Amino acid sequence: MPARDPEDIAALRAASDILGLDGLLSADEIATRDRVRAFVDAEIRPHIADWFGRGHFPVELARAFGGLGVLGMNLDGYGCPGGSAVEYGLAALELEAGDSGLRTFVSVQGSLAMGSIHRWGSEQQKQEWLPRMARGEVIGSFGLTEPGAGSDPSSMKTFASRDGQDWVLTGSKRWIGLAAIAQLTVVWAHTDDGVRGFIVPTDAPGFHITVLEPKLSMRASVQTELHFDDVRVPASALLPGARGLRGPFSALNDARYGIVWGALGAARDSYEAALRYALAREQFDRPIAAFQLTQQKLVNMVVELQKGALLALHLGRLKDAGAITPAQISLGKLNNVREAIAIAREARTILGGNGVLIEHSPIRHAANLESVRTYEGTDEVHTLILGEHLTGIGAFR
Ligand SMILES: Cc1cc2nc3c(=O)[nH]c(=O)nc-3n(C[C@H](O)[C@H](O)[C@H](O)COP(=O)(O)OP(=O)(O)OC[C@H]3O[C@@H](n4cnc5c(N)ncnc54)[C@H](O)[C@@H]3O)c2cc1C
Image 1 (tube, rainbow, N blue to C red):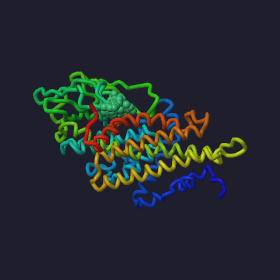
Image 2 (spheres, rainbow, N blue to C red):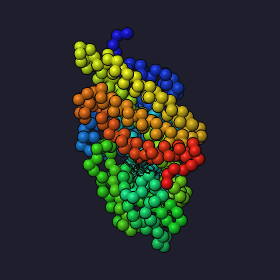
Image 3 (cartoon, rainbow, N blue to C red):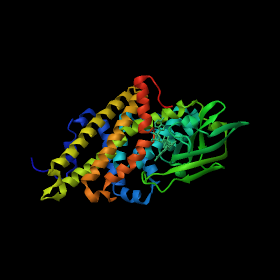
Image 4 (cartoon, rainbow, N blue to C red):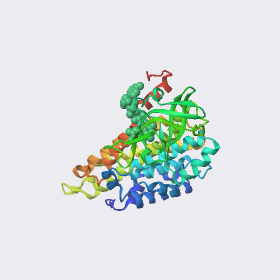
């Protein structure tokens, strides 16, 4: 067999689908994937190194994502695209092949903010916000984590108290994606009636936002710290359906599901960068792809990529059948993010010294995936969820 052409991406990609997993997708699913892939190639890939280097999120992408139909992608009605969970997963994968920060935008907007309103909001709240959010005209954020409450959100201190018909919020949130560019935040707070969710306009008096920077991960993305200094909202801001931590956790489960797929995109892009480099780069009078040690690295990457894709697709089919469980999502998130980081780091080694330059994607993906392994439940939290599932013994405390 002649050496593969590093510029023939389609052939390289086809060769890496050893199990023929594309054959498990419907024509519609492949069309959705290809549409998002083409968008990423045209609109994200040429600019991402610059955005990442400058720590810039191009806010105009919000409407472009709306036009692409990836905001609230698997939600029905209210102007939402109404796609399947598998289509949403394929889109997450292609977006994260561009950059985790851009997939994070779609997750925060679609799964966390829109998902909370769609599942727990009143009819009026859904009609008011969801169509504009699906078009990317309104940006939403999701405030659960606090400076002192991360893995244990039940220890949150933010409190909403009743004052006549209004609610008054006090407290802080930390690591809240998009809030500085958003029009609303879904804020989770303790009340006398347990944890409740509120749709809070980001320009409300007493709502203070500080961007967290500089970061060494997720640089093409915005995270913030929020302070609520007696922020007053009307009774209509309360999400009527959400009571207790089930409210935020249901949205987190959807976002975690997207990560199961998304992380594979960062890993695939890292693998492809390494493969193309290995075919083009010569040392000791041969392409470095000709060395057994390099081939072993590439093979190990593809073995995990293929297993991860099978896992993601299985979970997607379960989700579309309404049969997915939180433990299954934990297994997928834990495995696929862990393997994606390993792949991105291994890919970087194949690029040698050039691999630390921002123009090559693996080191950027590896840095981003440090955030991905931390948010939506750390490796340790998902291990404990699975440990409790296996033993029946909770080991969180
Ligand atoms: C880029 C980024 C974007 C984010 N976006 C959002 C957002 O939009 N909205 C939002 O609400 N939050 C967001 N987060 C917050 C994220 O969900 C938290 O960082 C995460 O839940 C972990 O909380 P923490 O950072 O406070 O770490 P901690 O909870 O303090 O954990 C620190 C370490 O201790 C470990 N640990 C904690 N408890 C246990 C235990 N019982 N057993 C063993 N180990 C334990 C953890 O696994 C971790 O390794 C974001 C975070 C990042 C980095």
